[in-house]
Length: 113
Picture 1 (cartoon, one colour):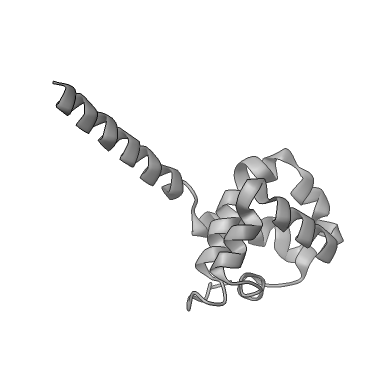
Picture 2 (tube, one colour):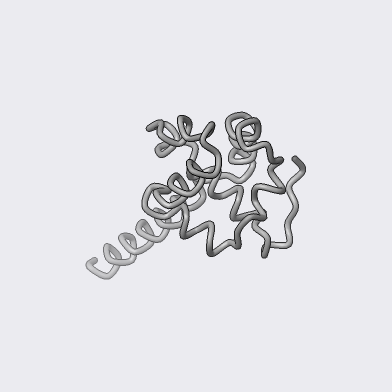
């Protein structure tokens, strides 16, 4: 009985870990980028995403995207209001992160925007 319970707990934990990363969506991130950031950055999604490697993007978006917000608020001051919103951190950043990681300069992928 203990063995079955331990197995079920391990399976539940693994499903939880996998589903968390599956919640971010590169397609949503692309839409959010086009809707909220393209005009203020002046770059299409492809040019924006290739600014960094996948590992660099992951580092920028770590810890509630603190480094991303700091870097890109100075690069694109018009976008800083969008980055400062709580909704950016809670909703948009994980999808935008997934988008830029998917299409980073070392990924070999090219977005259609």
